[in-house]
Length: 325
Ligand code: UT7
Image (cartoon, rainbow, N blue to C red):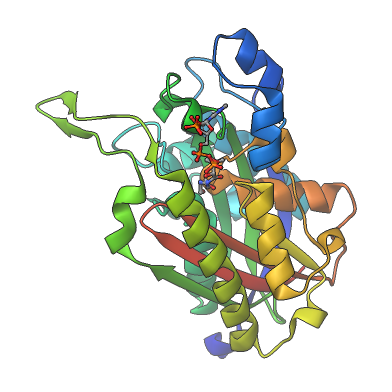
């Protein structure tokens, strides 16, 4: 067998949102000085889900993973690699992926680790998992984005707390004799670390500094619009395909205006774009697999169709992947 001929395909998707939706009006009722009108006009967000106290990223990840396994027709022990993209892990260590492995009852000694690339984390994790599979080192991966961003929000900062939510999404990526993933690209530029960050640290057993998400919204907006259209073009060039052959764009779900602007630059009509930001806000690394799973389960994305996913997040990190579903 020539391992170089091994491709990687998505065999199943899953997702999980905790609890009932919390609407913009619910936030107003909780005392946040905002309005449904402001939030919806600037972001397209109508609601988000917030995990109850005691519910962690691994809890959400396990639910999404179980759905993805069922969709792929696979048992937990068929998985020999777990990558969880998260910036809100259960613990400093062990990794959330190790906890997911144990909770799923996987005892085969496969690899498990976390990836931290914030809102681009799922694209990073997918890219990494593909490489493990294409070398022949692993057969079948769970690639998960899971976040409890509500834990790092300053509920007194209306400029950020209304934007984010909690959730998880997952895919089973497995070895196949046809693609699958056609191309993927990753980028980072750490010189922009200050415009979106959680600057706190752990020292001497205590959090020092500021443990909440801080963002220069307008700088992030400009950066996101620029790199998302660039990286979409780059991944299509890498795969040797044109925008006309792309059936669906599944972008990071942060802001409908960023999504619309990216689609316009690519010449894609909005009916080819999966937009779920109204229902769950920005769930960081979970947002792409959540939207992907929704589009698959609702029958929008059909087997054989071509899908472009792309993300941008703190770091700054950005990337895209193109695959045939
Ligand atoms: O994964 C990447 C994650 N980040 C993003 O995608 C964020 C990208 N940036 C954005 O989406 C936009 O910059 C925001 C939606 C965050 C903010 O929109 P903006 O048009 O850039 O607003 P702004 O920050 O310039 O604030 C405009 C006004 C200010 O009032 P004044 O100074 O003009 O009186 C804010 O105090 O809106 C006020 N404001 C709010 N008002 C009601 C800020 N937050 C709120 C709020 N409700 N939640």
